[in-house]
Amino acid sequence: MAATLYVCQTCRAAAGDAPGSDAGDAVRPGARLVAALLSAPAPEGVDIRPVECLSACSQGCSVALSAPGKWSYVYGRLSEADAAAILEGAARYAASADGLVPWRERPEIFRKQSLARIPPQE
Amino acid sequence: MAATLYVCQTCRAAAGDAPGSDAGDAVRPGARLVAALLSAPAPEGVDIRPVECLSACSQGCSVALSAPGKWSYVYGRLSEADAAAILEGAARYAASADGLVPWRERPEIFRKQSLARIPPQE
Image (cartoon, rainbow over all chains, first blue to last red; front, top):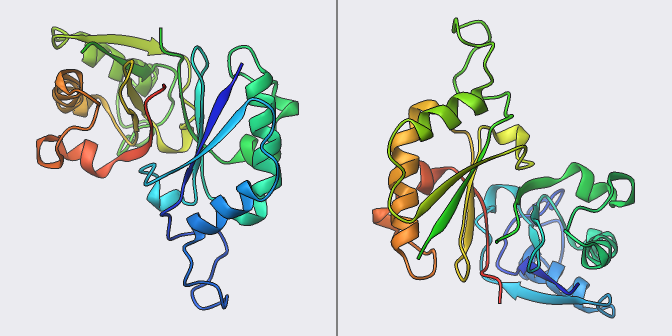
């Protein structure tokens, strides 16, 4: 039931992240999201992996969830403020049989900010 | 080197598809895209598979390319007029080792209308 949470670490964009609004904005929003996700213990069965680009740049920051035999999902318009909800959703995904977490058990960002999903590989 | 081309057959939207502009608009744009893709011989190594939803509804119509050991890709804002280019891109994807087709060999819709990509499963 293990799953991989891919996080775009190179993303330059973040929802509500106005240029110059943050003394730390020399650090890319994607890198800040990675740091926030790694600052807590990873949920059971979830491997967090920073990647270079998820090709969802106009909808960044973005993450993807994938596991053998499961539907894959990509979520966007995220920021470091969403780290706890992302980890909660990843835990439910990892615990699911096929990646299809019941709607009401999904964090709101997973319900509203899906960019795409891809069927399981056979 | 085989690959699967998933096509959302339930999509209601299509780029440039004004409501009432087409006598055939009782048929969903997703179904029309599926029909267009299946009307030509499938490229070598490409399995075309209609699916219910790729969760990219705001960017429909959409397709996904996936294969064991390769990066997966999702493309959006497509219509039946793009069928030939989609099949050309799918053929190049199927022939690639890792799903990463050189930029200049990708059809324009694949260069400009990527919604997301997901790393290969390990």
